[in-house]
Image (cartoon, rainbow, N blue to C red; front, side, top):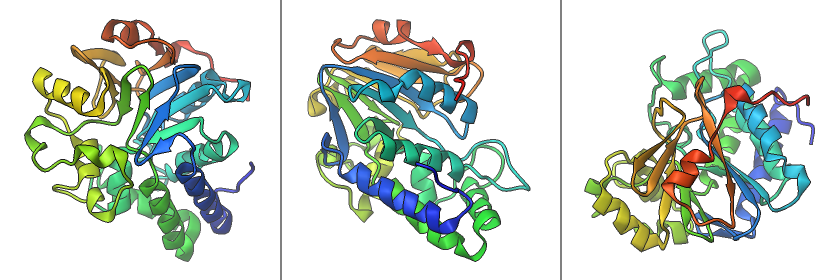
Length: 292
């Protein structure tokens, strides 16, 4: 699918079509994707407009080889590089939207706090200013007066993103998890249902709590395992110095946007363990860029 990401009409149509593809995924149940116990899943962490690493991930995923190959992506926007003082990371979101359309049911983008902040226009920063404002400035730079229509199409796309991917053998992959101290306000059944507007907004929306959580404990994580009938978690939403690390006895953290960024190629027929997830990791700097 060839789309001119500087053309407002084509860009809007792209995100509208990708939104429909997300909602029509046959493996979708509520706000999660359930994957079978066969095939391969390539798990990545936060990318933040790291285009070179995205291209390497696309090459590794090799989605064209068959429908049992899957890739999980997260936190695509709000990168550190600006053009004329603007963030143009909508283009990375557009590249992935094209992949979602080209390989339906194989590309799984879980909602991250930066995408959610962009959709709700809630200020968020990676240290270089308000990322939401910089992103909107980028849309304005490219699309002029049509930027708001493009932004609305992107908002609808973000609202359609799943919160988690769960494998048949008990691995839950998401951007983060609700913190231990907010469970009284969090609806654990949010994964089983469609999201509503209230879920997206702080301080107590369940999607908001899911993508922003940071404070965990062994007891809390085991409670979540029991609630969702899984055994292990793999999450982003953190600076992971070595790319992948065991954060708790049943949780692995992954980061893909820096020089030690990593991915985890995972055989869906395997039962997860922290040790196996970490030992399966591959470092993106050690992987050659694809020729096309």
